Amino acid sequence: MNEREIPAEWIERVVSEPALRLPDPNDPELERFFGIIPEYGDRVLRVVVNTHAATWRVVSVFFDRDMKGEL
Image 1: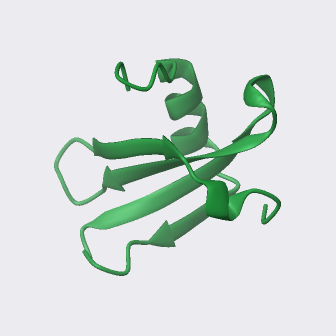
Image 2: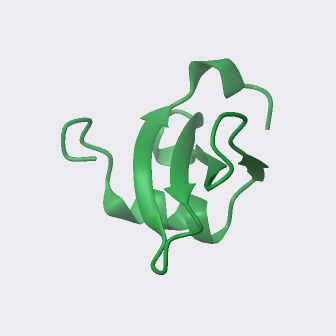
């Protein structure tokens, strides 16, 4: 998050109100949350979360070029 300078508010927004939520095809403990970030040119933010942990843990966060225009 800090490396990519992605604000925590954007991550929280995508996880709490995702436009799309999918299971990770490679790991059954992970889910992918997608959301459009209007403040960043309507780019799609992907947040991968371990939803099987006692407290959900963010595994990775990045802007997903492949999802632009898909949501």
